[in-house]
Amino acid sequence: MSKKEIFGGSGRPEADNPEAITTAETALPRAADLSPQHDTMPRRPHLVSIAITAMALAGLITGVRDVGQAPAATHNAMGRGVTIALVHGLGSRPEHWFLTARHLARDHRVVLISLPGHGSSEMLEPFSLERAVESLDAALAGEGPVVLVGHSIGGLVATAEALAHPERVRALVLVETALRPQVGPDERAAILGALDSDYRGLLRAVYTSFGRDSAQGIELYDEAAALDSTAIKPWIRLAISADLSVPVEQLKMPVLAVLAERSWPIGEAWRATADTLGYSRIPVLQPLRIEGCGHFVMLDRPVDLAEAIARFAAHPDGEPIARR
Image (tube, rainbow, N blue to C red; front, side, top):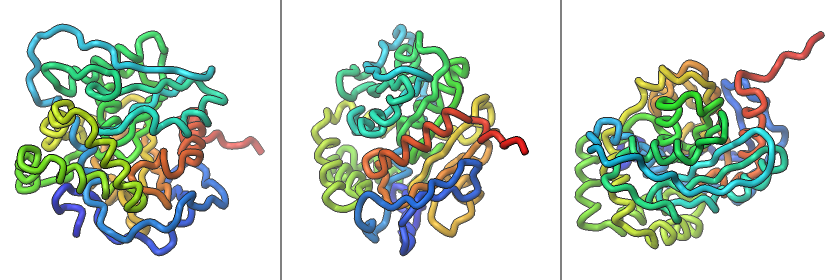
């Protein structure tokens, strides 16, 4: 199944050797001698690891009534130092960041933020990306410029925040995020139909494909299915046709794109992946592939992800060149 089918995830077969972090075509230093923290990845199509991440941006083209300022998203903080704010994805929760956050908190202030409609963050009525950005921005108020990290759909909200409020964001990290739609009109219609006719079946297809293996996929599905569908469906409905691939040319801060090999296949040039996912116009961008993991990189390679974020936070414009 190609990545243009159904939900638009990168459904190409994975490489035979998912054995290390790689940094092809990136200024970040290669992590030496890293091995996967789990067994070999399942050889099945990654149906939606990118497509569901395209779901938040439709709010940019959706009118919003004057209903007042959105309430701040709920958030918790730990540690001291440069602030790194972590935003989870759709149907996920801040606790999924915990192992990565704990590692980062040794040298940084880490803020864990809940998306509207998740955890104790109230759903916004009416809902739009614009209001989700207001909620995130209110949570970041008083933090000073942060390193803003978003996973999947959280990366889309983080990108919209960085565009709307560049003074808040000193660097942006996007983990398994697409910035342009990964579905065509027929696939979009199928998704909208499934929301009403087979919601749980749709979730199962999505979240089981996210897992590094079938067991993790079922766990992810169970968590997402336990959430209030009235809070999840608006995210999905708003997201299918949204596109930030052109506005991102206005980003004023450096960006790190962290992708699993499902989204950036081994052997594929970064330029092709960047075009597919909508990264081509970002002015200052470093791509990083982390192998041996599923869509939830923070669950499968938490320390490797933390170290990549910490390196980028220390030198978002690139590692300094040693004097000779």
